[in-house]
Image 1 (cartoon, helix red, strand yellow):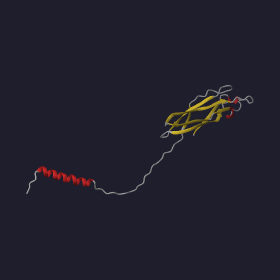
Image 2 (tube, rainbow, N blue to C red):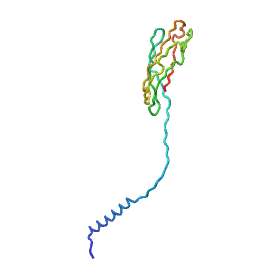
Image 3 (cartoon, rainbow, N blue to C red):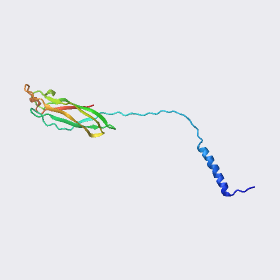
Image 4 (tube, one colour):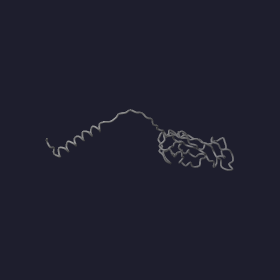
Length: 158
């Protein structure tokens, strides 16, 4: 009988292990399956429209003044603003004012101001501008009630 040396025996055993191990590596079971999951979309909260322009006291003969501002966006991401619309909400007369002063004593032009931009999250973001406000000087009605009055403006972003 022929005697094998140790090197041959080790090589043969290693080859058998390698081939046997390779066969195991390629053996597997297949299976199909199904499952379910969910994903959610967020929502937004309204942004705050800030007026940053300072309107100096209006009166007869004073030129119209431009309104402008920015936004506070507390959402988790940017929001798209198409327009800012300005309106005269009310007029607060000075204490002891003689006569009546109403929103009709003021002229707001260009009230719908296009923005067409994304407003990033944070305070004092983005910009809007374009509307003007002026005192509507009447030659037929006493407007003394408008002296030292405060014009309360309202802004809506859409």
